[in-house]
Length: 95
Image (tube, rainbow, N blue to C red; front, side, top):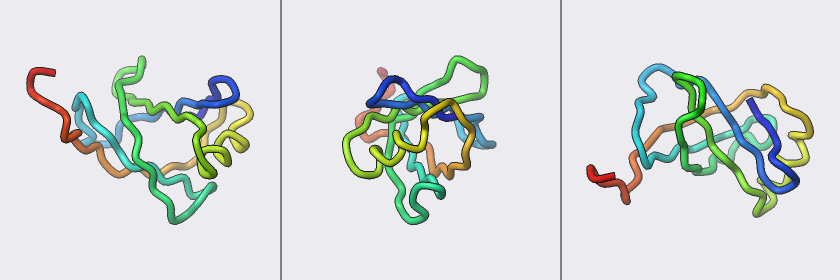
């Protein structure tokens, strides 16, 4: 689920695929085939308010994110490919 948050950011929420895990301080790679079939971008992933769901927040800061903001005018569902999550190298058991 894609939803704009003003003019410069959006939030993407999705159901966790099998084996996704519940790591804190994790990141994933996101590919949106309807935007670019060959670009994967890294984003921090965090738990969503729904059980077994996660979210990422994206801020407009370049051509890819600017194109994303133009495509997401109203809340919508679109295909996305996720690789990860990966534990951040800055994670520690104390966090």
